[in-house]
Image (cartoon, rainbow over all chains, first blue to last red; front, side, top):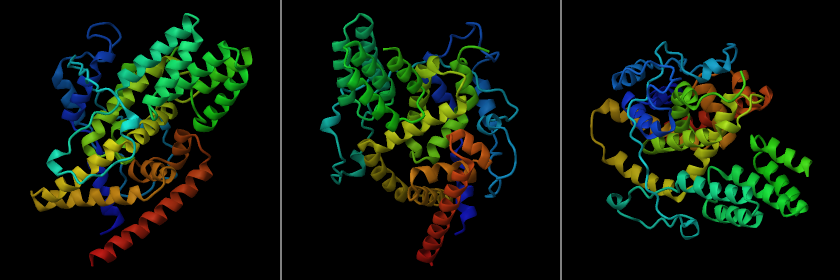
Length: 214
Length: 169
């Protein structure tokens, strides 16, 4: 067993055309409708997606050698320039992912009950849609001047989505609400915790602007 | 320029990178699609707030890291792991495919032994073939830091390979 063999085994990490197509379908509701103007590709139908994906050869692996000198522009390194156009989004079939009520407190640390393999099935993850809906509620409350309700909703978010993907956004709203309530010290303290937790967040500039403006 | 790029453009430009990075940062094969979906949902939501003073790729990579680490923390993921081990053992099939899957599983195992910072650097440099200076920009860290993490990661992985080889002998 050699390191190179292991590194080579990662070649298959690229998505297959079928996998890309499925993901396209799941995200289609976030794209402008076909023919709706600024789509870069001529969207000829589903076949294009499979073709483009299939052409995605794995050029990125240099036989286990680390490329430390080559001045490849980051954009180039990150995006794939395989010559083929990116796959068009073909299937406008959003998968709404019905989300079960999240009770994070009820499912904290794993209780690895030795469940039979067949019984282990996909437990629903907390949904981003639920998370987003909660934060939208907080934002709306803030907009109508009900900072107290906004803060309570942020607290509910923190409780229900402890590791939520939108927690930076939640913190910004909460800090804004604290400022609106005149609780500047709390807002400052929360902002400091935010900076420690998310040092490179896009929200941090806005948070600091909020603190400066008050 | 002005204004953030269109979501569709970001998605199409970066979906392959996001996919393989999600996989290599420790998401099991069966969950990659869901996690990618989540990444791009977050991207879509936060894109209007993206400002040109940060690199899009750095911003995107930050989202990938966060969503992946959230996912891995979940109890769901751990339960899922149990399931996959069983699947691996049960998989018959041709020898070559099995050997490749085994190699990939071993790579996962060794990557799991790295801390997240070293894993990120190892994945981007060794598996994605990116230059150190590009990785430094992507993760917003000094070049020297990337070098030292890479060095430490290689060291640990090499020792892991030796250990595995000794165990197999």
